[in-house]
Image 1 (cartoon, rainbow, N blue to C red):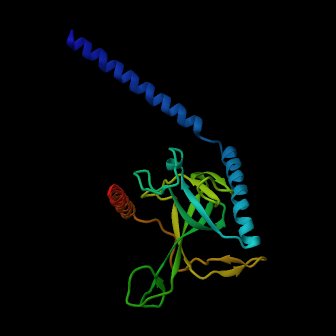
Image 2: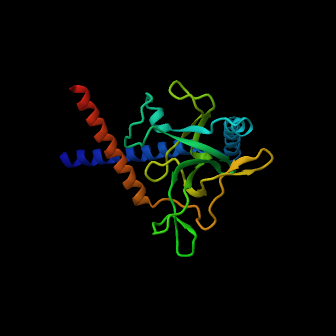
Image 3: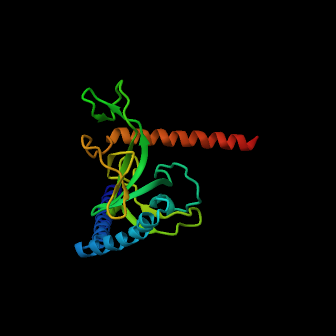
Length: 232
């Protein structure tokens, strides 16, 4: 009797698993957009992105925007920027380009070095080089929405982005650019030239996750210290 019951339970579990797989497959197929739908979605996002970048270029407005982590925002964002296993809530960046594949933003400024031939490199040498900027590329597929007017917490335009990169990054790749922009185009807009000998790159997966883990640990440490201070 026990053996028969166990086989019945096993068969029921197998049926339940098959049903779950079928349900998930149907759900994913339903979410998959046709090529035309993808292009319509990108066109809509491009229009919103130009509503942000256009006035910046034409009127000289501040180019600072917010890259918001969708998975954090949709779970009850309260304006804080703590780091959880889903990543940080947001980051402040500078929007610089809108392209066929997505949006480029300036993420950080950092020091560079010169190699034996005098070329700029990010590898540390004895010869310091000029500061460079690291720009991140956000693909359209990772952008859920763009709002020009910000929200209750930020008086800046917001890009709502799925952080799908290694280490909960919002970028699918990075580009090293000159830190000093040059005028370009009819309106002499600021153009940050990519450094020719440094190709676009993706951070190493293990390194990106290690940095994320360190950020997560630091956030927890600071939060504990803050709670301890408030209790005294």
